[in-house]
Image 1 (cartoon, protein in one colour):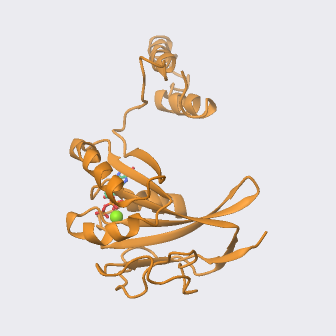
Image 2: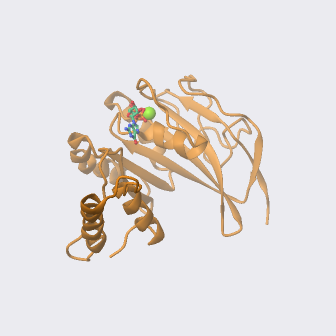
Length: 234
Ligand SMILES: Nc1nc2c(ncn2[C@@H]2O[C@H](COP(=O)(O)OP(=O)(O)OP(=O)(O)O)[C@@H](O)[C@H]2O)c(=O)[nH]1
Ligand SMILES: [Mg+2]
């Protein structure tokens, strides 16, 4: 099996004329797989830079983050790549930006070249050029922002128009309301048992709590239960 080398990197472009197909394997930082980042775009280093150390991989895929401005695409990518939350003032992405991450999946090194697109309307024509090369699309909405959810329909229309027919698509509800959250389905039974049991545990704890007893953490309990059940259970 061949071991290709990838460069960890961060790239960006705001050129509306550049296409990911224009610059095949330039060997430059962050341009590791077939259809690469355009090199003729202007670079806007709005986020902390990553090191340019090389990393080996077996297969590579392109993943694109799309969704309204402010839903948290850049933050999600930084969390995934660097394990940190980009707190502070919101810096809207200009054009398009990317990060590489190599994951070990079943003894294979899988490189994801993750493209972080600008959600703002004025950059739409830039991002359209990248859809057709994406193997997977993560479509984000903000669970605290109804408009971003309502716009999912329009995003899906755009995806069907510009992306490959067999693109892997995942809808992600990002952010939180600082209250325990889970999705339920009365039809399939998803999380129904867990929702009621968690509330019952919380109520029981409150009613019987001794002053020296550690408090029951409803959110921790729900997260732990969902994790141990492989996320979502019936
Ligand atoms: N509380 C909370 N805030 C978040 C989360 N994700 C992002 N934010 C905040 O939401 C704002 C927008 O986040 P970004 O990741 O920059 O949004 P974006 O989708 O990349 O926006 P564009 O680049 O304009 O398309 C920032 O102020 C973040 O700090 C989250 O999971 N929880
Ligand atoms: Mg962004």
